[in-house]
Image 1 (cartoon, rainbow, N blue to C red):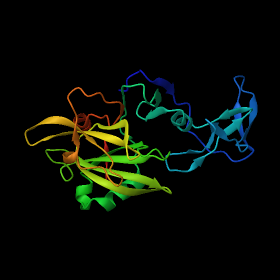
Image 2 (spheres, rainbow, N blue to C red; image 1 turned 120 degrees about the vertical axis):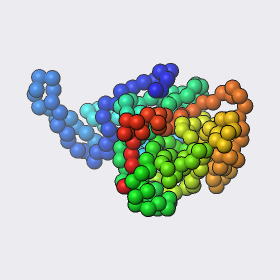
Image 3 (tube, rainbow, N blue to C red; image 1 turned 45 degrees about the vertical axis):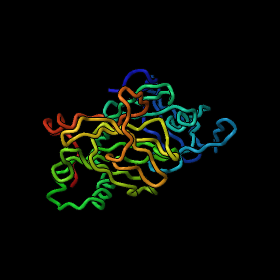
Image 4 (tube, rainbow, N blue to C red; image 1 turned 90 degrees about the vertical axis):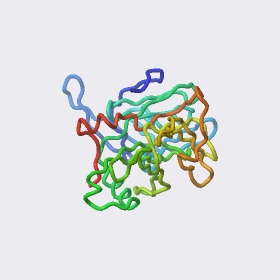
Length: 267
């Protein structure tokens, strides 16, 4: 569970893009129908002298919306522009906001919604027969690694055909025009995957556990070299007690999920 040191807000509803001068109906407390005037009105947002644009998880532009004189803007977009980290825990239906440099760790469970487009992209990368795919679970989270305002997707594959004693298979995708483009693959992945607040060549560092083969478990830091992240076995070993700030993705108990029959399976 995410630690309560961040600012916690319940999600009131999904963000939607509404056309110019659209009209939506609402009902007041007295059950008297009421119409609210809704418009994007070409509202611009200036942060520290610079006009900024907001995008959704697929990279589509999201405009601020004006409703009865009140302007509504995407929470993630404005929070990240002001130097805050945003995490969406879908399983708990909660958005967490915290200062990026405030220290500590945000824990984020995997998305649990079947994603057919992502599944198709996964199947193009891994070479498995149809019966093997059905035995393979996948966990995934959205997170912006390169700071361009558009989320990448980290996937962890679990099962006898994609896992070994040292860990599981990991895949990293970027979203482009509603599609998932494969960036690179990882071996020996163990969850959680920590996305550090520190960056290398513009991309956030990844921290994973390296273990197996009788070796003592240790955390290693994967720094982006301008093209790719290194393999887990080539990561920089971290010192004992070294402080880590960031987001721990796929914060799930995988063994418990197997016992309870939970998880997403490739089809």
